[in-house]
Length: 443
Image (tube, rainbow, N blue to C red; front, side, top):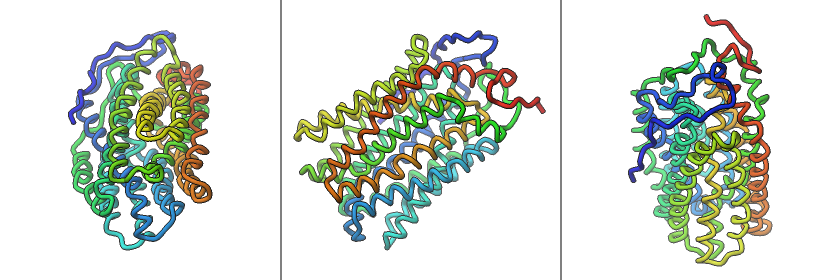
């Protein structure tokens, strides 16, 4: 599937802060930006293929190793524990060393571990492979968005992050489809991820580090401990992390057990998993792209546009998700389509905020801390909780319990909208005009 690539020239939005106090907001991307976007999009695609393959084959894995749903839920938790613990480490490294090398090495590590997941003879070894995958993805997750943020200016970042994150619904859907095709031979689903992952990892080592955007103020210093601690003083950053955590808690756990839920509703895995994958591709893809572009378009009229579109879409998605639990098939597929659209609409805007409200010198660490928080308190804990509730009652009750956090995330994003413009302006001032950052003279 060939997607039209975003334009490198989009008019910059106006800002209420005087132009002489802000870094120039040019809409020209750096040379090589499009190639970097394509590569990182493909890597992100494989990232989510791997994650959702596990979801699609979770039940046959449990049957082969004779473990419960609560136990297979720990496969997701093991991955996320490693992912969130190592992300801050690689985030700090990325603020100091060549980022493409970190990304390439991480992709190769997780690809080897993903392929190796199909060859393990015990459940404990499979848990170990998920830990290795988490370490490999930790080298990529917080670093990739910073490369794009350095290559594309604020005016078009919502659109660029939307294209980058369009890999989430497409990769997730492919993961469900591949897992569904190999449902009875789940080992081969993991083997299939190895060759493309290795190729993409090697490709990274041939990429050049991005330079400085035209008109952008140079970063004269490396980040200090004060800078890192100051991240959580940025209201928009903190609120965004909290909202993304609530969303991740609910949607991460629900996505992991969705194939099992659909089977419990009388839908065969061979048919339901590909259908669900198709819904994720079409609805999720359009929602991700439209969400990012909508945030960009509304910036000049609504300073908190990225938070507004994120919050409203989640508040609309919450009742739609509850409707899924009571709607009979085949009508349920239509409701699921609409719910997925609303729940994916925030993907581009929320990730754009992370870049826009943080300085380049700490941006990788900002993404890494976000990854740590949203997974530590989000989908690292929700799959075992869903599995426990499902074992005690049923999967429908478990989904209903965790879906409340969808509503919470929407409220948080709407609350944070009033702070977004000020925090964006502060992050884009030259060093000598920063508030909340320690100023160090150029070397």
